[in-house]
Image 1 (tube, helix red, strand yellow):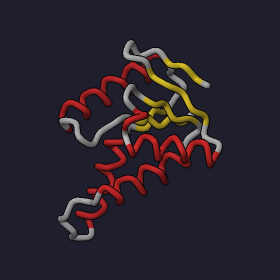
Image 2 (cartoon, helix red, strand yellow):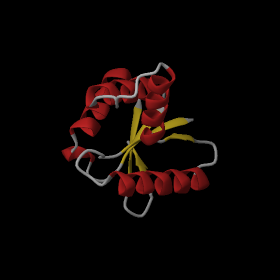
Image 3 (cartoon, helix red, strand yellow):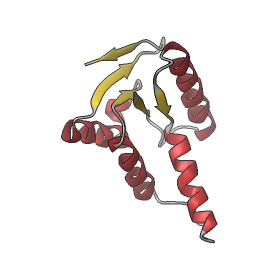
Image 4 (cartoon, one colour):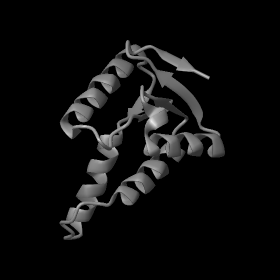
Length: 117
């Protein structure tokens, strides 16, 4: 099962958020070996690499990052939302996409436990 990890990023220290996402993905991979966890930072890194390959050295805009995240999310079976998702515009948009496109929704607690609706 392909699972997208949704977490608040804007307004946070990027290094801390990357580390949090990596730890959470690692834990989820350990606990759910049959899941392919999609880390949104990897989605953004691929987007930046594509631009660099075309000779474009500018960073993608917030809207470009979100469009790519949504495109990837639509190809997933489930999205897991981390603490604070409800106050993040990006996470709220991802939640709406799940509802509109029938992507299963779950939540990740601080302890790493997963609740699926």
